[in-house]
Length: 269
View 1 (spheres, rainbow, N blue to C red):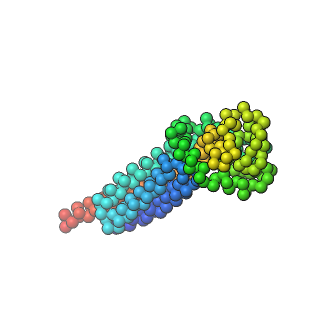
View 2 (view 1 turned 90 degrees about the vertical axis):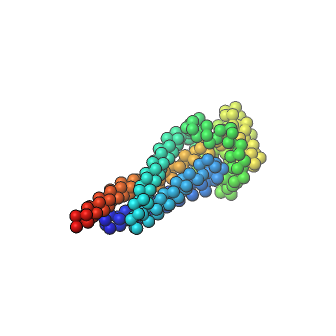
View 3 (view 1 turned 30 degrees about the vertical axis):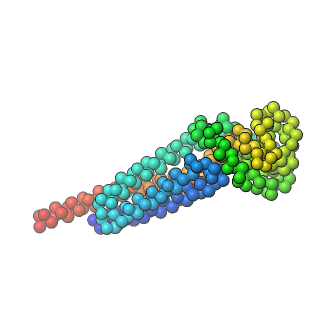
């Protein structure tokens, strides 16, 4: 029985360590400039990681002192958390699969169309109800102002690899034919009817293209890129947790069998 309990305690320690990349991924996602403006998806991953941490500690205590109630509670809760993590991963994969980006000839960056992203992201993240607050929040960040100090010439800017958010919000669409002055100052559009966003562009540094559909698309492009990176760590953590859980269930069952056998022998003694 001691061997099974020790194994379960070690497995819970591994599960505890798995909560670290989950929490770290959640904090990284929440700290990104775009996610600071989207409250809906800022903290779920962090909360899930903290729950894994607490449940793992509960399982460790239950295994170390062999508290069957705590171990049963741990196994039940961990099954629920693993299921939630898998649901989150599948959901994130499905809603971030469509890619609204397209190449722009002669540019190092890509541009984005709102129609190219999943309906769920369009309807729940950048809908008209939410966009006013998101737009005001983005205008207060330094997402666009950083470009003016980083790129000092048109050639540098056109060859640069700017983020989807910067591509959509900090400059007008290339199709409009605006002349470059600096990364956030453009004038004299040659083809203002090429895109509705051509009329939404403003050289007011508090406006820029924050009213553009390209800005909404750029925000979703950023979210897609960030969630895809975070999913790599979350998938690894999920696989390890599943293995730990399955082995933990076997160890718990074995410990119960050993305990029952020990009581049976005492009854015959």
